[in-house]
Length: 388
Ligand code: GLA
Image (cartoon, rainbow, N blue to C red; front, side, top):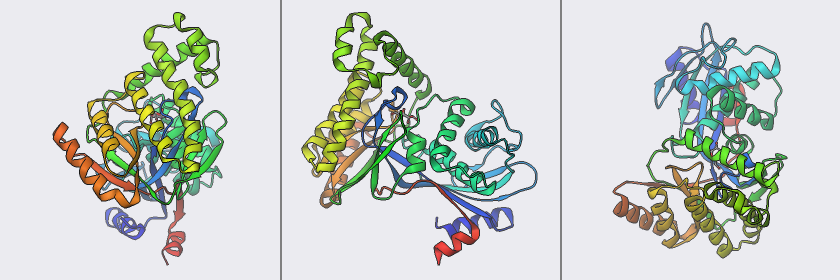
């Protein structure tokens, strides 16, 4: 949907023109998986799949409707509190709560029309995109003056304390702080970002297994506590501060599972740092090896892959034009990300899709994605200027 189409859809639904439009992208993560809640390094890129919202301040409750899933549950933005939300509108409701808490100001109720091109349950952060879209929207409407980094932190707080998912900061930072043509090397401890251009000859290809992410929350929280246990035993603040040597020295004090979880995180941090150099040098072989090693470590040590993700990754590794591929996001279903030679995209797509279908019976979808800028909001008149 173009901004005009979104605006027209709003008007058709609510009978008046919108005042504000907001947009926030989903993300892929090139490498650095399950490192963010260990104060480590991640390497995501915001992608050209968006949650877009047209809105105006309204009478009564906040009424949101989605082009994809219809009406959401209403809520009262000036009073909503943890425990009140349900369904997909928990994310916007949580943002209203967190923005009020942080600013000490009220946020108004809205009528809103949403359109999303971020695949759901595919591990590309449709929920962070939803949080950030409403973050920038209310920030604009209520003139709260927050920058996008701050809104990312508030998005994480919304997810942790309102929605009840104990996620790290990667997804919100990617959706808030993405930059066109670039991935971002993010230090999740300092929140410092080093933007890294994606080389001209490479395309980011999202390889969606169409196996929805399952049972993620409890398994995710379990991984988190295993990491915390490992850092306690190793005597470090977070696994970011541990080395493989430290881990090996204390191996006997850890259960096998906790040892393997820690080994994944520690080696994944090292891989992420090495990947940054490999990408800058255009070193295809090294990029490929690091992404493959990341997938294998997530599969064997962290145990968050699944059959479909493994088959997709293996199909990608063997396909023409593939520089590197691995599962992306939390795991347990969802998608792989591949870096593919621009000139070989068609061959890559047809060979991977065909092999994946043969081995799983599922129709995976492969889509090339462009790295884009992070979340933004515009008033209706700004949008007209942008469109002219
Ligand atoms: C989810 C979480 C992120 C991160 C990834 C795994 O996407 O929201 O914070 O932990 O899983 O890397």
